[in-house]
Amino acid sequence: MKPLILDGKTLASASEGEITKRVKRLIEDLGGKKPVLATILVGQDPASATYVRMKGNACGRVGMDSRRIELDGSTTTVELLAEIDKLNKDESVQGILLQHPVPNQIDEKACFDRISAAKDVDGVTSLGFGMMAMGLDAYGSATPGGIMRLLTHYKVDCTGKRAVVVGRSAILGKPMAMMLLNANATVTICHSKSKNLAEEVSRAEILVGAVGRPEFIKSDWLSEGTVVVDAGYHPGGTGDVEIEPALDRISAYTPVPGGVGPMTINTLILQTLEAAEKSI
Ligand code: NAP
Image 1 (cartoon, rainbow, N blue to C red):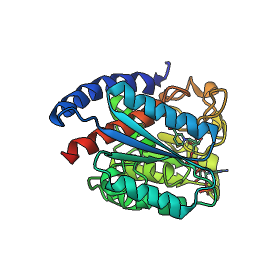
Image 2: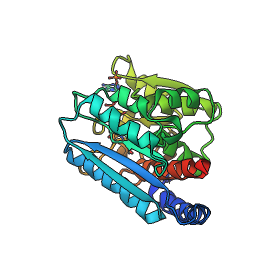
Image 3: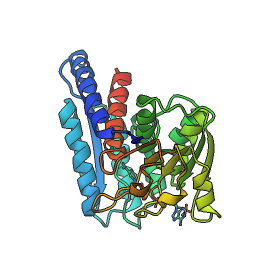
Image 4: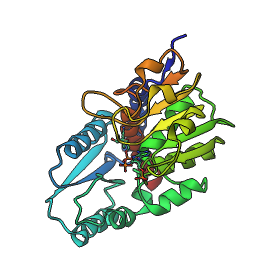
């Protein structure tokens, strides 16, 4: 049987329709003022510039404003912190996105953590992570948050399932593991020091690839019936999982592109709307 496609593109597009209606109602409540997502891009990295543009475009599609702040690649931590402080105080801004990665001279963690919890719509602060992990009300990191929405939409029940997350970054692997745990999965986190990776992956009923290396997770590591979520994206449309040869065995998968990526942006937009709704 053909595996189910966890189609993030279609779900994100349907969700945009719902978000657009809510934004319209909110603008009426705000007497005509639009919710604003501020995006901060430091430096000239073309991929980051594209991501920021895509996020701004998504705001426009649902009727929200985005305010682009572009800083020179030589910006210091102190200068970036000052910029974040200004946005934290600015009542016309409801969400703040600092595009990752920032240039090496900047202390990214300190800058993420300066974003006020109420405006941390990308879920990047340590406080937000801790609260999310404790099951409290906080915006989760947008990529794993989008993955959870996708799994919920397609009725993938995580309860009691063995979930394996390959990758432990602060914005993806770790929050992903916590969200799966909160959804009652039995979670294993693998990383570059893990042993017997193929064996760990083969035990997964739900597998999340978040490694950042093209087709690093091999198809013959995947077991019968596994739900495969591929967060990776590499030029030419490859993900972190070698999926093609396993299509006759697995039960569901996220396509690359069109799986996780659109849900990330959609979750950021949804969380910005929620922040704006809470602010009134
Ligand atoms: P990252 O910060 O580079 O983290 C990669 C993780 O993979 C690390 O935890 C690392 O382990 C682990 N890893 C590296 N080599 C490994 C190996 N040989 N065996 C096992 N684990 C290994 O990357 P990221 O930001 O989490 O992103 C991961 C992927 O997701 C990338 O392809 C990125 O483009 C994609 N992504 C997509 C979206 C989206 O919206 N679609 C958003 C964010 C990221 P250590 O911790 O031990 O070094």
